[in-house]
Image 1 (cartoon, protein in one colour):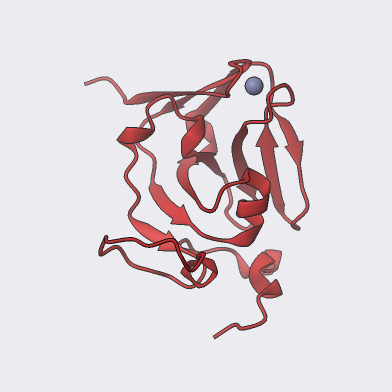
Image 2 (cartoon, rainbow, N blue to C red):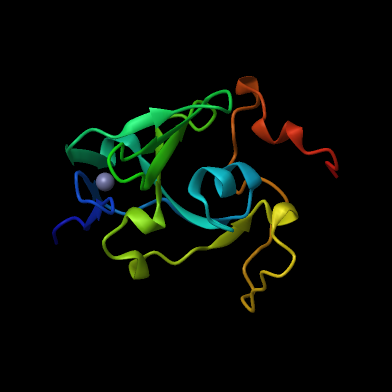
Length: 151
Ligand SMILES: [Zn+2]
């Protein structure tokens, strides 16, 4: 059986990627940094190991505001492509909107439920986690320490 190959492309098509094999994680994300970065009330991230991703076409542009986190986007059309995080070693997270077949990626969990916009409602029975849905290396620091109400 051939490995699963999923293709991704930005809105203008200059940045392209192939993801080989299965993603290890797919999650909703309601956090406010991603909201600003993507211009969307929430997103869905698809987690791959970095060696599973091969970029083609134009290289993505990168931007970092949060320590340890580097986001990538198309410098031509502005589409969000993904991010890497020093606290999540060797992982590459793609936005679901970058994928050419987003319907194939079903999220398993809600992350940063504590930051969900109040009028966004879900009827699913997925776990609703206050913060990260993945273990992140605490030595890198915690971008979510900006949260004042940290229960
Ligand atoms: Zn583009």
